[in-house]
Image (tube, rainbow, N blue to C red; front, side, top):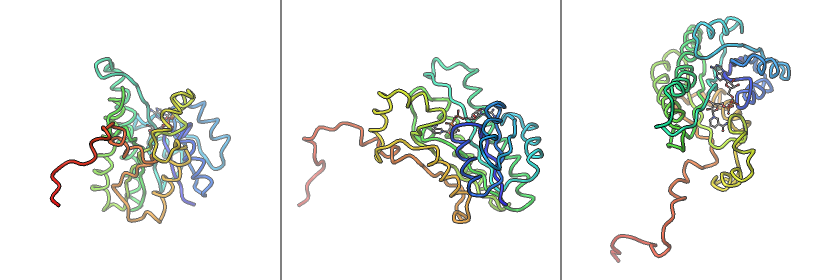
Length: 257
Ligand SMILES: NC(=O)c1ccc[n+]([C@@H]2O[C@H](COP(=O)([O-])OP(=O)(O)OC[C@H]3O[C@@H](n4cnc5c(N)ncnc54)[C@H](O)[C@@H]3O)[C@@H](O)[C@H]2O)c1
């Protein structure tokens, strides 16, 4: 039986990844700092072991892996937090908290996972980034900087750990109707405005991200490493399309004919 550990597994995208992996026959470890939410999630899902730990503490991560009792085949770095503020108003404490959980947490967990996986000579690490790490967004400077950092870390890990038998990839979710974005989409006005911007005309679901994780973890993806898979209904490509242009400007440059 293959096994998978997902950080931030108690809620949102992490819970969906845990559920989907368990349905596909994985033995799953859901690792989260929120013990109550974790117990609830583990009690609702089959084959899911609750692992209470913070991704910011390497000793807790080592303990969580030994509590799980085996080196997982797949490690998903999904735990993440966001603190919205314009950069000039963002406190250093909030900046550090976001960097600590998102970026340092991803490095700590990847290091622990890679040490164990390299002994076996195989493993897959999947990092959850965001389209916010590809393009700057409103009041999300700290968050975007960490997600961009995770993208580069994904490339670096794939470069260094390929020869150890490990594949490292990332998934950049777009506008997802769930998890930390629930309060945004609970507001019907903003829900409509945002949905209209997505080329596919709908918001993404937690399961869309879980499906992408299970694909990158699968044999079908065995030659894919260092890749960031954008799962966003096309919105990252729509930035220029949203810029207004006078209809009188229909061609520019010399007509050579
Ligand atoms: N929901 C979205 O719209 C969206 C879009 C793009 C990217 N993402 C990314 O997806 C990932 C999951 O987000 P979500 O929307 O499910 O959020 P969420 O808030 O629902 O879940 C995050 C989970 O991480 C856990 N967590 C926080 N700090 C932790 C720590 N130090 N150690 C262990 N666990 C910790 C929380 O307890 C929570 O269970 C994040 O990395 C987020 O940046 C989400």
